[in-house]
Length: 338
Ligand code: ATP
Ligand code: LTN
Image 1 (tube, protein in one colour):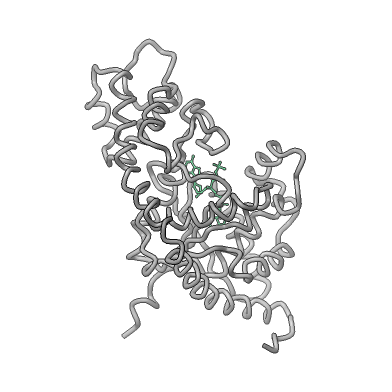
Image 2 (tube, helix red, strand yellow):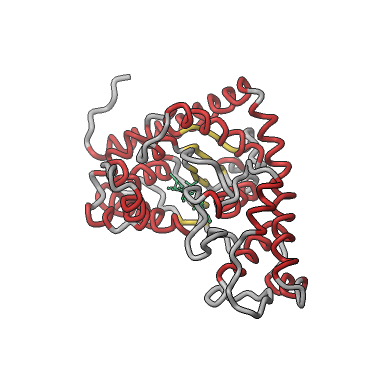
């Protein structure tokens, strides 16, 4: 009989350690990851090489990379069931990234929304890495033969480009890569900024962003100040076009409580925003409390965290090396003598 583990499909995802994780990254991506651990063979990476496309303070980058590993575990990712590792520890990512650059068009990279956004925000540092960011991301995914990539909606375009690159390579050299699919949650795929609900929640706007490590007081304050709507109706109703602020709060509330939009409308019928906003805040506080506490506990044990990322990198590299060898052979590189 076929081995159960071998039959499992593969998941790969990553988050940049370029800032503190927030409920956008949690509800849009990580929460999904936890639910998938049993069913899939999962690789979750801390993509520090992607982070340096924007200038980082070295000490902060190092600290946040380890913090992020602790947060992955605190969110419920069991390091025995998932391969948790740091991207720069597996050099095959950078190597395959280079190769894939040669199979990706300038026009394709120019069309990426994240590149356009980030180059507008970092006009003084539009470096080559920012431009070729998606080919490194494609390498991350393709090295492990990932079938699915659980991400928030903003990353769909990058996964689609990964598919195009994989198909192009397979057409040239024969089946080499598994063509991955994005795996996007129905609720929580796009959490918007609390102070400006027409743009996505992002660490670059801390007032409108709820971080996983925020204290209950901070969370409560941020939700009380959340922009709802200028209408006079003051009614909790799901209408994303008309009432984007309320829709965003409903989507957050729905993600953390599991309640449907209808149930939420009923719960706050006749109660107005004055009751709704603190209720969302409280639900988020209770969701984040155990995560924050467990993160703090894990951070106190640096030796354990090192053990986890060492084992993770070893497991990841075993798979990555095999893929890279196959690719090198296909494109005509002389076989590595060691
Ligand atoms: P930021 O805009 O804060 O810099 P980012 O996109 O660089 O965010 P990452 O931390 O690298 O953020 O994203 C990690 C994961 O979280 C990705 O899968 C991304 O799709 C998802 N994500 C990030 N922000 C949101 C959001 N506001 N809503 C839903 N998902 C999100
Ligand atoms: N580009 C993603 C982070 C990322 C990623 C990946 C996600 C890097 N490599 C591989 C999924 C799979 C972001 O900016 N959020």
